Length: 365
Image (cartoon, rainbow, N blue to C red):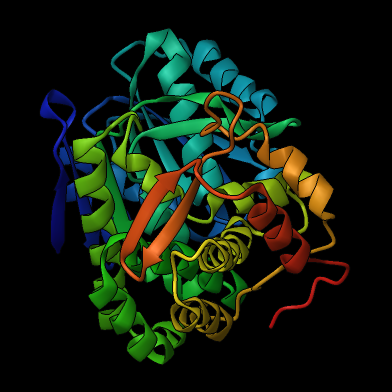
């Protein structure tokens, strides 16, 4: 079992990576000590893993379940209220724990409910998607979407532990697995050119579900994120680099009502757009911009934002959380493995990038 730590003083916690963690009674007893446990999952994941998790938690506890609809469109305040209602109805105290069993939507929503209930109770992330294991479950960002924008309502609330059972990746549909690789690619782009090159060389093994390759990809991604979060928990500086591709991608998700594209697909298109804009600004070579596009395409991910007009994308970008002084700040690339946050770019470069990368058709390249 691989173990990493997110170093945050008295809020530090481990990330465990192995196959079969969901049913491991010894692991669950150590990291979920509460007697009263609320398991939050969704209609897709619960039939696959809820029984094993409940059995692993064992007798002698009071287990309550909330099963939510699946999908980004359900990451709402209404579903947070549903979780809070169950906690109140069952008279859970401040010594309870929430366990988020699912992907990024479940983890974000359950974590936000845990942050709100009685001003904060413990929760444990049990991510079952690649995207959640390498990104969403790590770092303590919790929250929900608003019709006006992605993740506009939320709180920083660190989990007590992250238990990443890579055996769950075998049950992911191919589209969901590919979507997770967008976040993995992001880590190589922001600070690890060697990891990006490793991904270029080992993508076939990753796409086929090779366990050793997946463990390496998950571990290295978590190492990078844990290091960044440990240095900048609340995104006052370096942590903003983890949003490479997300300002573009979030605009796509918001403009399409969170129903057409998976989060990772939107981020993938956003990575290509960030690379293209970096090239247009003279920061990134054409060869490196093409490497980004090629790897995204080889992973079976979209390289453009079809169906959203440039004007609509720009309007949604204008309510991004990185706005400062009315100016959209973007994470751009000075090279593979070298990201920067800047508001110093020609407006024409942004307009031209949106014009080039938005289109009327959805197709995947």
